Amino acid sequence: MFRLAAAGRLGAGGSAPDRKHGRKGTGMTATVTDTIELVQIRLNQALVDGDSAALRELVADDCRIIGPKGFMVATDEWIDVHASGVYEQVRLETVESEVIDHGDTAIRSDMQRSACVFQGERIGGLYRVLSVWLRTTSGWQLAATQYTAISPAAGG
Image (cartoon, rainbow, N blue to C red; front, top):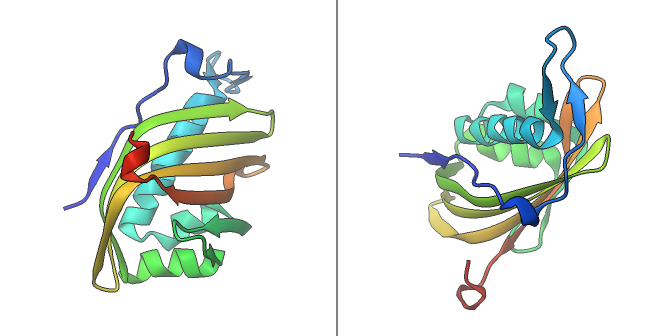
């Protein structure tokens, strides 16, 4: 069974202040951090569900994806491996998260506990995930992401 846990947030001193952008017609505002949190949750759920339509909406065609072993993965390959069931996410828990707002670009840094099964091999551990999100005319899209395994000695 898959476990998707909500993201933890860094304390007040752990992140840059958020710029706010308005939601038209509601009188409410949301921070970029809140918005990126929502698109990240959608992305994670689409990866788990193998929802290629949602992934194609959320991931830029020219997205740069680097896996935990340092290999570049093409966007179509990354989406297809999740949609095909060859890759099964068993656990995904965001332990901490920080978003830095740069206007139409946001950088998100997560620490995640993850476990998956890929081609019959169980892979798990603690990872740093660095993601770059771009605001486009159709919404926020993932432009780049890199997964780095955290050694047990580094803790977390």
